[in-house]
Image 1: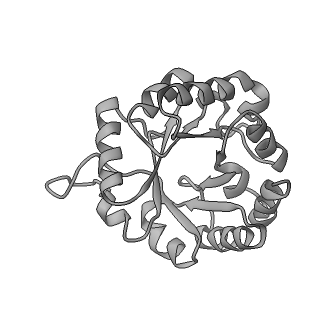
Image 2: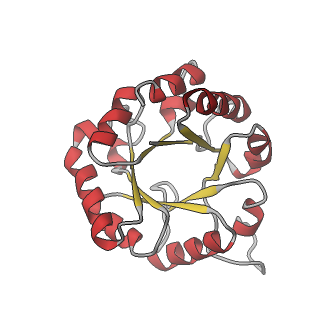
Length: 213
């Protein structure tokens, strides 16, 4: 199981969380990554934790003010999220962003709301898709218990399109039990945010997430 922690734009200590994530990954043998804001990619990467960008733009070098180039992100990051429900892309732009990320050597995780969108995203060739019903994001109620059929449907939908595309479970993940439930439903990873970024003790939250793996 892969644990990918999206720090969004939360008021948190990204470097401290990254250090904790690196330690937990080393101690447990579980793959753990952190996705900070773009400006915090360099110090987070310096901790040695696997680092993901929260987004890359569907453009290459040129006149693109305000863009986040995959080639620049790749100086610090190992991968990138794309099409999060808080940073939606049109399908053509998602396709272009995936191409830009792949050309820069970044691992790609494309987010989707439901199995139908998972199938569409998987057809574009990301390394993984993360199914996240928007209404459950940040609620502490995991999709794996609120609507497990969505996770199972996402796994089946991705497999029907491209069996090499992994499926991660997102939205409401906050405990080790949630991670185990996601695995039982066929997911190979989880995507979460507030369960770690807003925790009183992020290290303890991370340790709990991987405890049963």
